Image (cartoon, rainbow, N blue to C red):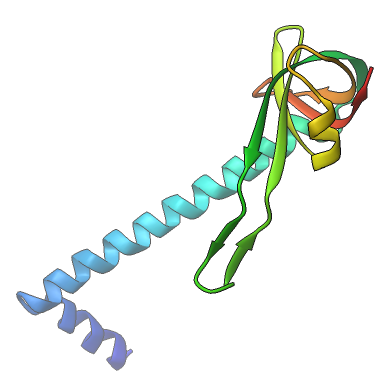
Length: 133
């Protein structure tokens, strides 16, 4: 109890104690908001696609993008190159990462067979499988 009184008196000391009290309050509040945002975002993302039935359908290739390899800090961060295909099914659009060989075999406007789910909250597509139709 005595240590708590000493700690409180330190924060009441002007100006250093007051400044530290304000900074610690801002840091604790900010980190609490950030953690809450991440938790709620994770829950909403999980609710969006979990336990949704898979659908099969045809889609159209709308765009192809190459994500270059990212290498920073002498190998500490090494993200390999990726090939993304944007597919449109009805009014919904979604991206899927594919192999370079499959990427090279596609052209814009090609029809593809998909296994996908629609989002419950955010809509959009979660494409699980893709093959040339």
